[in-house]
Length: 91
Image (cartoon, rainbow, N blue to C red; front, side, top):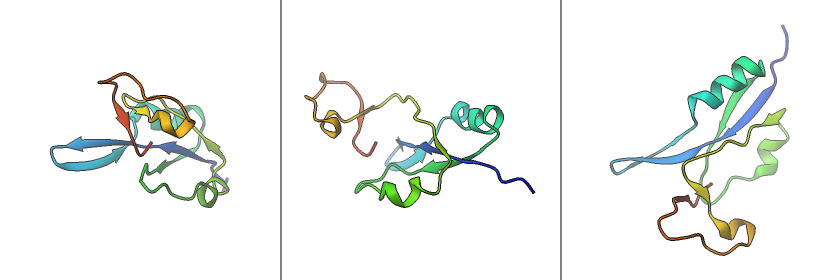
């Protein structure tokens, strides 16, 4: 049996009423399955963040997706963005 590569996909935090969910877009999941012939592994965007070293060594690839929400600028030592710009602090 062939070994299928594992490709990590970061998730977005989405609120459905008062309930938070972590999700990844189907188009990204399908791209990993159909175009890369790999198995998608959803990586939860949690705070505090999971230890990247613990899961990166187990993955064969990582697909960094776009999102409606943006990465908080303080994660890359930048100034806050304009008011009303959606952010996901856990991303």
